Length: 357
Image (tube, rainbow, N blue to C red; front, side):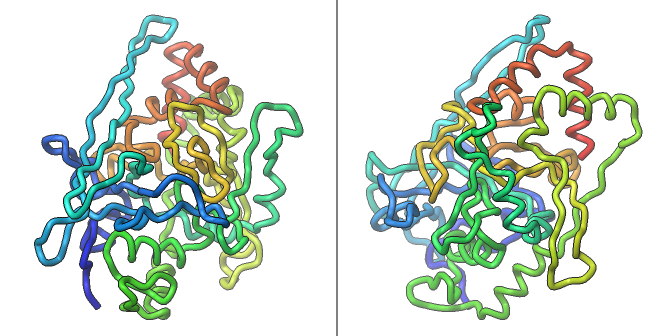
């Protein structure tokens, strides 16, 4: 079993530090280990998967085993967006400007680039057991109820429901793990060989997926605190809970202990249009560039404790829960507007509630 020949990290824990995420480090404009860039050619395949970029695949690799020139160097600069709340309190947002300098070959000017930070890996396993019919039942792709929210299911290339990944583009943890092994570490499996080689057996791949599946989720904190309770009520009142659905329930699983288990992940596992500010211009199966899966909130308040930093949204642009909320547009624009209109005390209560997850 071998690393590479091209890779972005030499182990799972290089990016998923303490089952969380590596810090978003940029030195002299160049991205270090952790964030990766998904890449594709314009258009899509017959099953709506992204086209491989000739010579590069669907992920740019920034290291090589033999020390030769890697595929590319990823450069990121930040553009700031300033604003003020009605009470005069200022805020500053940032958005990444991403470019790729091809080293092993030219990255075409029309290549579609999407910066991604690694997700935390505690929690996805339980979402594997939310029945598909429950996810479909919550979808409203044409906004039939007229509430301005049109959550949609992302069906992946085998017709199954996508539930993992920033765009819900992986149906299960086995496939998501195989993709990361191939694209980020250069280790092939029977699902995705690397240069024709299968280096990790199906049993080993299943063991890896089971590790992620079995990771426990942190309990909520300060749940009886009056400010947290007030924040929870505001979370529902302004519409956050319309997509960040508080509860899900498992169905019948292969583990009796997990059958009919009440979960509190704060996600509907559906795609939502988040507006032009978060549009990466790159579609994946049924997800357009501006559509993203509702991110679960469990564990969000412990990111700084676990990893010593906070990086939120798909590209790590948000350095706090507050910044992440302010980037919500599209279907969530009315929620963001309502958050901005809250008093400073109410904003603080809502943010403390989210941080208690």
